[in-house]
Image (cartoon, rainbow, N blue to C red):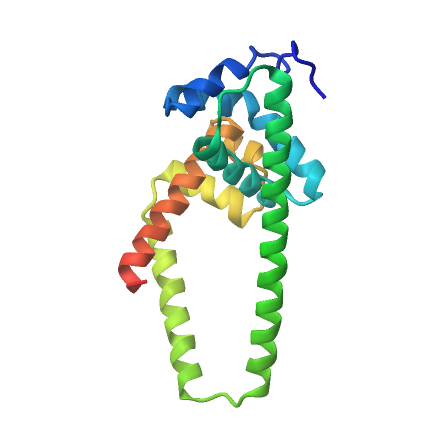
Length: 195
């Protein structure tokens, strides 16, 4: 655990940024995010013992909490303590959400197995097929670099670092670019399928 005079590994203290973040300064948040990303990811891994995708989701949501709830903190020890609590509660929320989702899926699976396949099931399957074809078309329309990044990360299961290296960018840049691609696809899907 950090002491009050400690600094993040290889960087300047982050506690001076907390007042600016609390006041809505985006550049201060960007600097804080850069300074804390690796430690936040390592803490998420340590807390949850889960895979990279799960931990990146935890870090992303924890950083959203930073934006919404950061208060000015007096020293680096206070920042370390506060971030530890934020990451712990965020990881716990994700684990609980995953457990609820698993229970729902098991219940839905049991209900589906108990019913007879009818015309509405065939319609749902056709709808699912249409969505898959739509997504395939959307992926072919991505730029070459974005398509390579998506393929490396999701089709080949590469880490962010490896997928980014294939596209000639860093792992952090790959994470941001993939997040923007997925957000654009989700928005387009909501418009296309009226959800």
